[in-house]
Image (cartoon, rainbow, N blue to C red; front, side, top):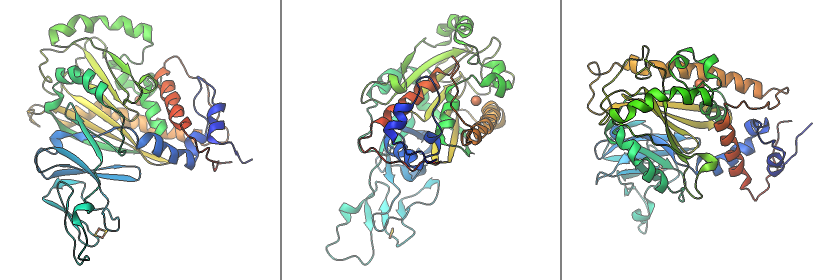
Length: 411
Ligand code: FES
Ligand SMILES: [Fe+2]
């Protein structure tokens, strides 16, 4: 039977403390609303300043239906523009990254400089005003060397994140990192299942034997607090402060982008997230030694970072369409570290490569089951509280809907 409930009814029917109903994962109208209310309204990590050190260096950042050119402008500032020609709308830049003095639209050859100005357009009427046909700017900001974009002209404030995360960023020398490796993992599943998976470690003990022998997040809260001791004792001598912020999802301040920071001990004997727990790159920033911890950063719904003492791993989850998403992973090391001498890419990327391949598999299995007629949300465990919070936040964003869309439904 056709499910004709509106989005308001669907949200009203949501049982607190339970996962989402099937329609939230399979309905194209809900996905469209998510793009409008969540994906393009929040900041998302697009890269690191070290990828575009000089004027004219650029990369393209794609997110669902949107594409932005992120470029170092002529005066050295990081800028972002919609990758959409002001003539008839073609994508302007087809290369994924590079260095250039101008962007030439492949359709009719309109030319834009690296500050987004239209500089040449053939055979246009005399009164055509080039000045008012520059590429549309996309909101962009830099925090701790990380480049964030938002496809909204009225993005959430980053004030709190900038203020509170300045110190954690400084501890690890985020401004001076470089991208040692980047991998893209396509996942055949609705994007929320991938984000939900990242937010809980209930699955870690079963799905990630390598991760679980070093990270303590798969322990319940009480046990984890007991193992924090050895890290807390060492932190100060290693050059780290015990800082914690939780303004994630429903805990975000009104009008602000949600964010969080905390550090969790690894099991004794592990200095970093590597095959044998031994360092895989030089110590970050001004750190003096290994405290045996790993720091979690959260920015908005889709961007996460894990800072070990010698490298940082960045995770970005991006919807492609209703039924597909990608996980982009960045491995960042000190800017002056030399590949082959100070780090080996295979060793550096090993843990999160194998962990992400396993995650991809369980997320796709989850997606297959969620689409079944037999799927019913089952209760969360006590180890899935962040996932539960994420779901509550998603529902809040969707409820901010005064149009009462009649949904298509999936039967
Ligand atoms: S669409 Fe770009 S020049 Fe025509
Ligand atoms: Fe996982």
